[in-house]
Length: 221
Image (cartoon, rainbow, N blue to C red):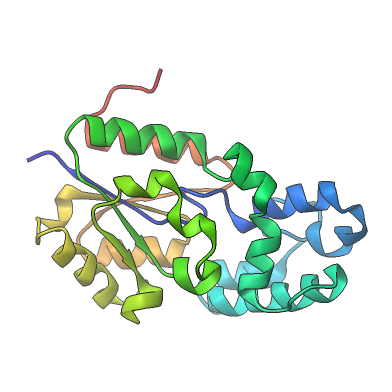
């Protein structure tokens, strides 16, 4: 049986909020006090993100804090959907700069090679509500798309992986290659028996190359 591909969305398929924050800072330099603090990708240390990576601060709590800070400075809403609308704006949608090219290529090659392509995300609806982003054409390749915003079960809860496996038809978990950018979510998937790849946002290309090997796909052209 060919392995299936299971992807987180934010940070894996979509460029991370921190990457989009850098673009926002370029457009609006008056926000640099906030946008220069962007996980491990910015020039200013981000200790709260380190807590999120360690699993001692919920990822949603981190982004709620950032939404409040940036929202006040930007003169807009101060909740997470407002922040995401600011980061993933119409310009990014228009040029498709929000999708990671390696992810697009991997998804299309996996689907073209007969592999199942699926998503397991915590926050698509919770973060983006009914924005156009949630209907991105690339998402049509996901079969299924399991969103913890809707199921109420978030990674790294073991139930989140069980729901994804059930939606995939209960394959051997080892035959599912799962990519996520949060170490705790990767650890949870590994504990559930999935084959895991951590997407290091400082070098995301390495993770997609590893996934290609695991999926037995040719190197991207």
